Each structure stands twice: as structure tokens, then as C-alpha cells.
Image (cartoon, rainbow, N blue to C red; front, side, top):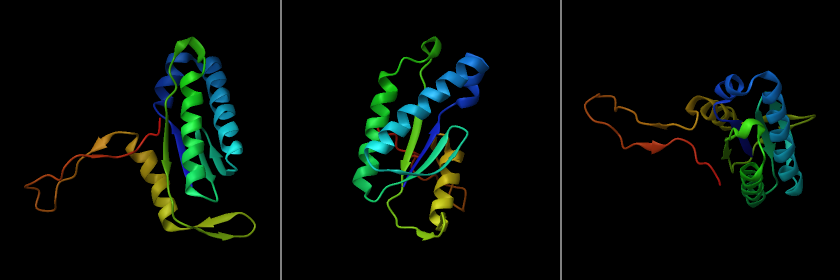
Length: 143
């Protein structure tokens, strides 16, 4: 399963304005959908600037993510504004309940986690509050 999200979409909208942002979002959708289709991805859900796409093999999800990132990097964006897209891949197997419901708590948690981390590194204090765990990359971007 592949999850994507445009990084800093609100700031991008403010910088570009509504019309240019709509153009950028449409180009983003086109480029990602082309990569997903070439690697036999099934678009489970799309909301705003985020995709949830299922693949039969993890290798296909990785290949689609790499191809999508390359296409995004080559794209001619409105006003020269870079559009960065976070991507996360989950390799577990969900239960699919007809007609089109995907059941797995881990999937829900991953989607929430992707939105919450927003590509930032994070650190946590242990319960005692006296020492810190090492900083971890919260999200892996495939480029």
C-alpha cells in the first residue's frame, strides 16, 4: 500500500494563488496516477492532495513511488514552485471486504501518522522525562 501527501500544501496554495494551485494539483494527480497505473496500482482512495493506492506486490509500490518522484522532479510547475510529495509504503496485507472496504488498524494508523508527521523528524521523551530517545526520521521519501 502506498500513501502520498503533498508537503506544505497550504503554504503552496498561499504562494501560488487558487488558480495556479489548481493547475499544480491537477499535474500532481496526472503524474502520480500515470506511475500508479504503469505498476498496476489500484487507487483505493483520493482526498484533497493525498492518495491511498494498493499494489499486489511491494516491489510494484516501490517502483511506482520512485517513478512518481522522478516525474515530479522533472515537472514544470506553475511559477517555478517546487511541489514535494511525501510517500510512505506499508507492506502488510489488509483484509478486503467487498465491495471496496479495506480493514486493518495498521493502515488507519499509518495514514494518520503520515498526516501528523508532515515529513518532520521527531523525538520523544521516555516516560521518566529524564532522557531522550534518538531522533528518528519520521517519514521516508523515495526519490
